[in-house]
Image (cartoon, rainbow, N blue to C red; front, side):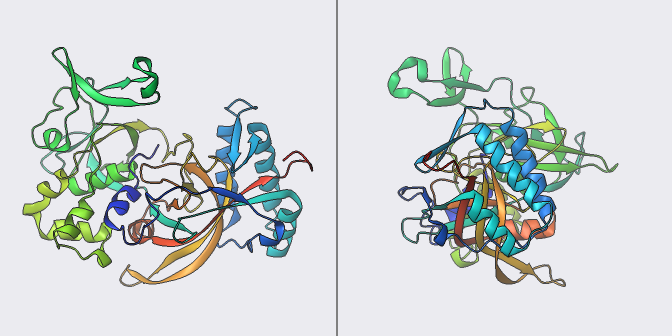
Length: 399
């Protein structure tokens, strides 16, 4: 699961843009009358959508067929979800026209719309991506910052057995003598080598800021000098609360709120190396990784599809489901590599991930893949739009 999506960062630093990030939750998903269905236009090739549907089907076939998924006030079983996705997957193989697609959806699918933020009724979209870092399998003078696996002394305690009031609550820490204490914070791990001999170094990288943002994204790929690489994926965390370094830099008047982005944070830290450790250590939270054969993976433990996978609040949106979004995307200038403008777009996506800051019906996070454009979009996207969820209709009278 993406515990540390880029949205965690942006939620803290861009509150003026994200009024719904922690606002009161409304209805969630509202069943629409067919006359209120949106215009279904997709700006991408359907091959990626077909692959993303295949990933959701892989997960759905692992769960009990009678497991239920909530779509607002309605419920559908896993076996029904499978039929819903298989029918849609088969239909798009012939690249239907917008008219044929709308008729197909009107005839076969029930559409639900997210109630969105309380203030706007819309969904705030942001983005995340898969970072690519240069690294080494061994520590060198150039690559001296470790990417840690889970520490041997880190423990997670389920408090449910202690009291009914604590049901579902967990604490993370370590045993010191006969006392359970909070786990080491970022400063202790990075500056005091608190994990020496306690955690495996999965790889070594040369840029501590890139390592910080690898933890924010939750997964990435480390490329070695011989051309080989390793996929690292979120495994666990130290249990310390996340504090936004972006908000810190805004509060200290080092970066204007209107200009805040991941790229601006990188720029500031590159220009002020003497301030780097202080800023990074302001966030005591720390992420540990595992090595995966493939990736990146989302909350369903299936591979995410660039442009087609989104992260949502699983308490409101059914994971693995087919969705449709309308918002904006950046157009990059070919020469500078910077954003030239923003343009409206719409497409089908799959709800396959979650995130620590993705809460409520007014939040969603788009996975952009890897590379310069993905990083650009993930670093700057904070635009509102609409989110719909589709599912195969039940026979009349069953809902």
